[in-house]
Image 1: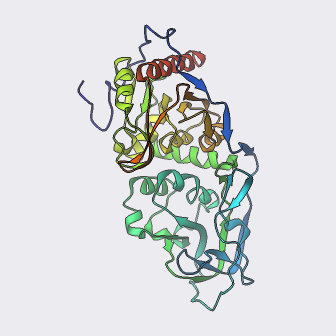
Image 2 (image 1 turned 30 degrees about the horizontal axis):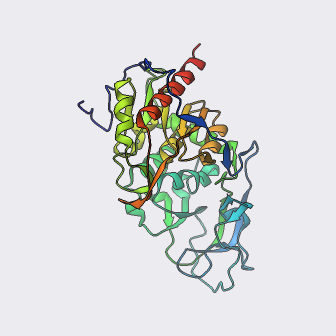
Image 3 (image 1 turned 135 degrees about the vertical axis):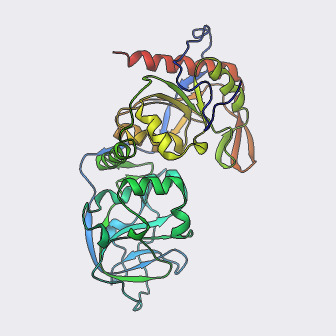
Length: 371
């Protein structure tokens, strides 16, 4: 079958065709355990104007972060994540013993703390970008967003997803200040991150992302309701986890009217506009499914690699009021091991049963949402 352009397969805007074997095979089960907690907090996190502080980027000292004159980290600047046995595990330094007299930045500008930026879509979305929920809507010429990164600002701004997201917030490269060595600030606004991995999310996170979605998709018509889409990793060159025989699954899905997309081949703007059409989106857990957060009440069918579902996607779905199912293959993904640019490769033992079960569940989600 000929593949459509821009990573879109299966004819684009066709409606889902129900499989004739939809009752015969059941391969997927609902996840039975969730790793992490899913706390939704209605109030925003705290914001502080920190004064006479030093930002120490990673690599300059055993400690890194934003520090008060006492050497204690500014509380709101510390990134946290949940992990087994710990609800709020600090990912930055809590203190810094040596803060000599570093050069000060121009005190006439308005500084906002962003923290350390890595060039990864999922981490950028729920970490550094999420911190910008409290940026002012005025005085853009005066605004400087303070960050550190192993990647230069110019290179970061060539990344499609970063440029798309910061532009939607009315920001340009001139609004960012990259610190490569310790720098002192007379004052800097520090908003606590509204998303803690595997632990909690504040409602303001969804509010911010929904606003970005509206800005990116402005003048975009909402069409093709209940379109069935599968986000495939089969063309992804590297990453964390992949399915070795995913092409066998996508071939069956295409024959049944599902559009198979490759997120890495689509600009983020196109992905956001896709979610604006309110499709039913299927796929293995990963950053591509996080994009649902740009519009409220989306429909997701997320496949975990085992009965345990890590909760970052669950946090996004719940704060965004998504209709979601989390499933796994009851036959078990066969581990192949690391290689081909991935930390782990798996195989689906019965691709036909897997795909048929996926179609059946997606069909149920479509019917449950019918008016």
